[in-house]
Image (cartoon, rainbow, N blue to C red; front, side):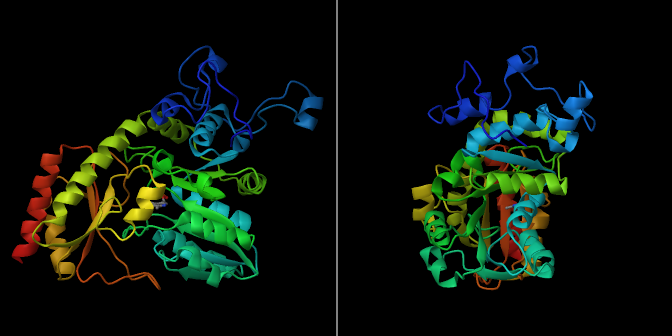
Length: 399
Ligand SMILES: Cc1ncc(COP(=O)(O)O)c(C=O)c1O
């Protein structure tokens, strides 16, 4: 949990006029708060001692108990506040918790929630099971809806949940238009911004109230940590913070530290992920056996203009559609890969591939005419990744 107003750190002022890599390098803790050591201490804590009974009774000191924040969790939360331009950030044990905690914070029985149909599948599962059980009416909308979301708003619509680009199929959303319409109805706008990271998109600058990240991905960067952050604007911070304290969903200090460490190099890693992924996406567009490449950075992508208008870059994950066939062809492609790992998640240093399942979609497009393969492009040399994809395509087309 961060303080509402991050303490300015001298001599490096936290101002958005600084370059993103400068911010990534210096945001968060102030070395002079801890004897000049550059990195903050990893505080393992439940109990915090009070100097006397009166202070214990009033709880009038900065830290009072491990679940309510430590110098380690504050360092990460303040770093994320700087990057997101938020009033406060909570740090939770997974990206999925970063989705569920804000939904629990703002939804009550009798409320209506609008969720983009291309949402990360476990978000849908949470909505369809727990939110439904708690008496929340859940409705899905098409990712391309834009200002048309107005027609779905109701007097009890409390939250509009966005994710751009969409999970696995990478549809872009017109976030400013959706946020403007939602605001007219007094709804809270949330965005799962994991794909872009605050380096390439700052949701709060575009009308979003709550920005959600699976820090497991690019912030951690090494496929060895699960963590999430949720950042709120000033209006919504008190309720988010209060729910966080009520649920006790605090994250473990070593994981928090690893993500803060990861942030320092995230900018340079992202540049490489972006460059390699775009080069490969362009190359794949012309390949035999590839019907379509779903990457918003490509001019051929239907959401390219929105991506170009609102985002300042692209990360390293996109999908390809094989030209016809089914599961057998998808498996032939995947089994021929030697460099790509077959595994879930993304944002780590290594390339990964997965056969996408779209059976959960209700209003978003789900039939692409061939198997969809999601590719997370790692930090390997592009020539080697290309050679591996050639192996996959050769196996898929020879069947
Ligand atoms: C868009 C998105 N949001 C949230 C999550 C959840 O993150 P975690 O794996 O840390 O629970 C994921 C994980 O793949 C994701 O892709």
